[in-house]
Image 1 (cartoon, rainbow, N blue to C red):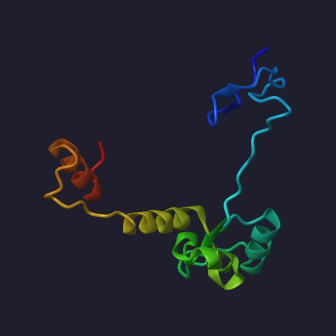
Image 2: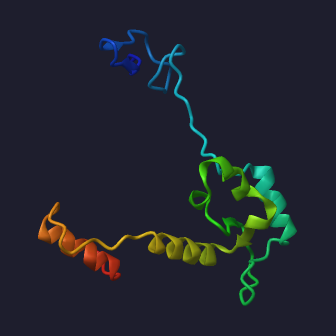
Image 3: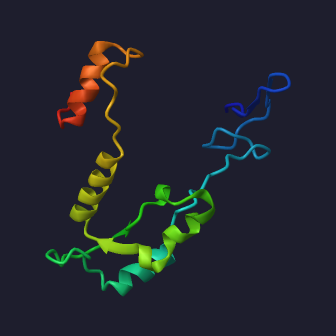
Length: 139
């Protein structure tokens, strides 16, 4: 048996002295909260989008079997009060696994910020590693 790992730091450090539930780290008084991202689609919504594309990749030259639901305009590009617009039908399409990987990599690469070469907050070695990673080298 293990004790519950719940702690409270403020106003004074406290721990829970109850036993955790079997196979878990918390007791029934302190359940863990599973956060849901604001842009997550339900299974039913994903199936509806897949069915509207006949489970076919949206890339014209591909035509392969598609299961990945893709946001055309990414969720983080919407202002906080308009995040609901990310899951509208006109902002979703279906891609095969291969093209979804390509789109995701392209978007992530566009988010990379090239460091200022005169920035001395990190070591020269770390700046070189960042620069080489942005050029496509990995180590």
